Length: 233
Image (cartoon, one colour):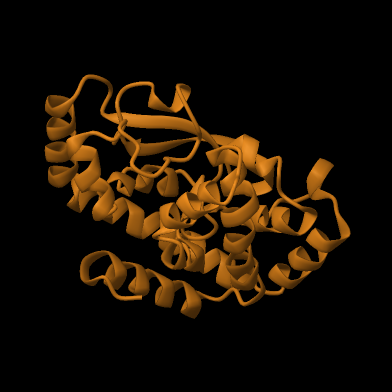
């Protein structure tokens, strides 16, 4: 799961320190990948009826494809195309920011409901099965935000991008922060995200990297389920 050799922007002393720590946990990393592969396959099979129903509803609700595909960055800085159910009008990502602004009118009626329960994330099980993502890890960012990473932030790219993380749980209301940043003078929503939200998220992501373990993964998955369905932190 960890890149065999660090090159380019990944070849920084601080990143090597994180890598050396992770290499001491090879057994846990192998178990993490085995868990991802087996559970994602089982979930795709068991949830296939729900996925089909959601696909039909999305198609009937608005024009455009069922899936939203966008380039994100994962292990070693490699690009991949993420699978998500489309929650916005067609080509909305080409018309504005890479993050959804507060009150964005581009979100569809069905999309708004999907986002509340994070059902739009379910197709990422495909990315997990393919090894491009993992259940727990730093959320995958678009290239323009990864370009703004410090060397230490890039250490999060030592592991595959994740569906959920402690940062995702803590910042499930990040639009409130973005709105406040805009009111305080940020020139645009992208600047607000890079200067206010991203550094705060990365503190949690780097802490996860330092304390990586399967027990922590299971705890974060449970917290995610509780947060989504019961609104508990």
